[in-house]
Image 1 (spheres, rainbow, N blue to C red):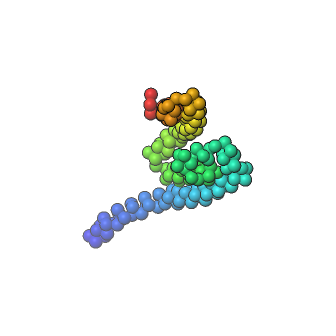
Image 2 (image 1 turned 180 degrees about the horizontal axis):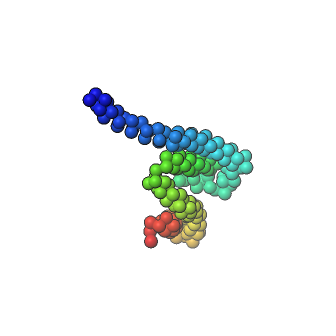
Image 3 (image 1 turned 90 degrees about the vertical axis):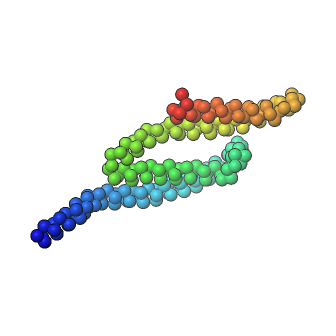
Length: 182
């Protein structure tokens, strides 16, 4: 009778132990991929930032007016630092997706594949938004200068309306690219 009780009590623990041992290699693979991804992301971000500084992207953005546009938008970081951090987070995001895929759980793999298929659309929408922002600043300044030279009293209002109009068109294009606004 006592052997039956021991078998009844230990059988669930045995099943749990076998399941844990079956998943353990996947968890270790996930941990290794995540750690390696963090190291690679740090290296990529640092190398990208330093390379852009050496090439002179910060000086070029000062001359073009990108730094001033970023300051008006509330961004006080150098463009090379921004690109380096974006590179870091992109590599870390892909490493995290690879690490989660190492668990070999079907629903998570499907979500990861769907996200990876959506990445080009997000990148395109981001570039459209960035171009729209820069274009809106340029067009707004041009309209302001033209309105002031023409002697129109609501020059600032015209410039602001132009800026918002260009931003709204850019936002609509970006949302269309994402498939949100149809």
